[in-house]
Amino acid sequence: MKILEANNGALTNFEVLDFLRAKGASKDPTRVLAKVAQSEYKVYDYLIDTAARDQTRESINEFLESVKSHDLAKAEILNIINIRPTNIVEIFPIIECCDTRFSDEELTEIVEIVKRTLPPPPEDANGAEATKSNVEEGGEQMETS
Amino acid sequence: MFYLSKIEHTLPLPAPQLSRPIREAIHTELEKLFLDKVIANLGLCISVYDIKSIEGGFIYPGDGAPTYTVVFNLIMFRPFVGEIMTAKLLSSDADGLRLSLGFFDDIYVPLQHLPSPNEFKAESKNRCRYPYLIFSLNKYTKGTWYWKYEEQSYPVDDSDMIKFRIQNVTYPSIPVEQPKESKPFAPMLVTGSIDHDGLGPVSWWPGQEEDAEEEEEETAAEE
Image (cartoon, rainbow over all chains, first blue to last red; front, side, top):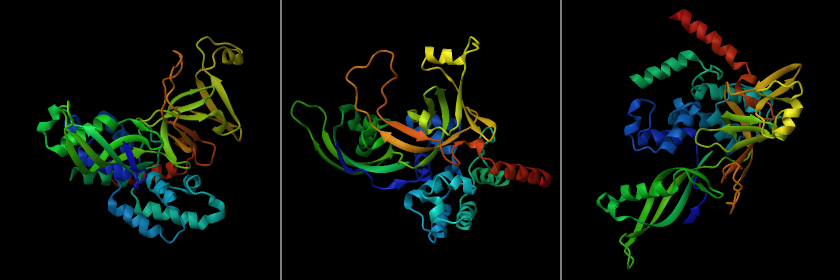
């Protein structure tokens, strides 16, 4: 086995979820018929509970366009797309040297861009994660229609 | 978290697979070989993304299977240092926490990466008035960690997801021999830290929950 390129590109959680969905992974009982391996299903089950579930290519592109004006590193943008922080406290650990590089207003602006462009994460079973329930219902309607 | 890695590999295609279209057959063989396996310094292989090229098909003397040289992309799970992730709590003992992502279980948050000040309450079947005695008797005592902040004790338990930051990723080499009682060998070890603002159980950092409850009341009123 020869490794030609160890890093041929980073993938967001959404892209991996999209790839598994295209293979036929899903939450309902027809999942047993799909050509998806058990280990791949474990990844799918993990990702379906994160913010990546309701994201779309358009929303991610929109986010990337809007956040270009701020000086964020690629890894930080990737982290933000994967985690979808809803307030400043969640952004703190993502951005390195947060207090020296950005002021509080800039951070609030970045959080606003996130809230505006990326759909909110799904609600956790215990209601511990944040969710806007009306948007979540909208998301479910889209899936059924 | 996920990267694409381009790999070139030479593999024989067993005879029963020869009746299938070649792409499918090679895809199945690659999945058998790489799926859910750890490649040193590349990470855990999640999936075969696509096949770039298939060459060869030579049959070596004495062999029943044609050998192909395939170039393909694998989706690798390789967390980088500084990445933030959420995981479930698998177990918690005197040495720290162990977290699980579902597809990957070897994430440890050792003692020094827990927020301080903290305390550990070992759970014990026989209620002893001196918990530290039990502590010394059994090193792997299970228990709950508490973070003491502003007079309040916040527990780290499995009621919600735990956000943590990657400190380190190592790929220990395969041991030749292992004593019977030690933990099963982990080819990829991730060390995490929850010693920072915004990290730890998700319920520790409110502010978003209150907004969500207000919105839920509003939508209920509308309906």
